[in-house]
Amino acid sequence: MSLKSHLSIPAEHVIKAYKNSDEASGFLGFRMPGIDLAGILTAGTFRMKGSTIFCDFTNHEKIIVVDLKDETLTRLLIEVEDVEKSLELLTAK
Image 1 (cartoon, rainbow, N blue to C red):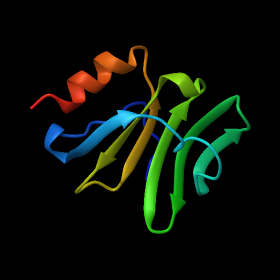
Image 2 (image 1 turned 90 degrees about the vertical axis):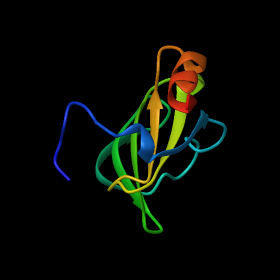
Image 3 (image 1 turned 30 degrees about the vertical axis):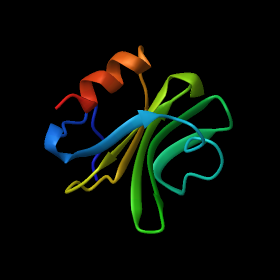
Image 4 (image 1 turned 45 degrees about the vertical axis):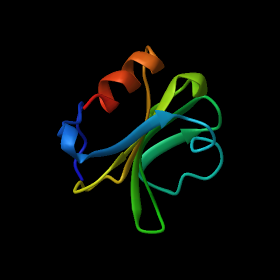
């Protein structure tokens, strides 16, 4: 996977999106590449149990989780400005 400044994922590849509860706490997997500065910054790609997770967050209160299908990435944990509006956009059919 190459380093990119943005991700482009078709809406039909989003299985579900929801507010973070515990997904961002604890062990996310092995960094490939990525950075995890305990409670300060988590960014990059992490692999665990056959899943590939992309993370980009500093504030745990503003994280949404997006589960994906038919993508190299299986889950996104990303910080957004407005959690509710972002979830509305992602879950609108």
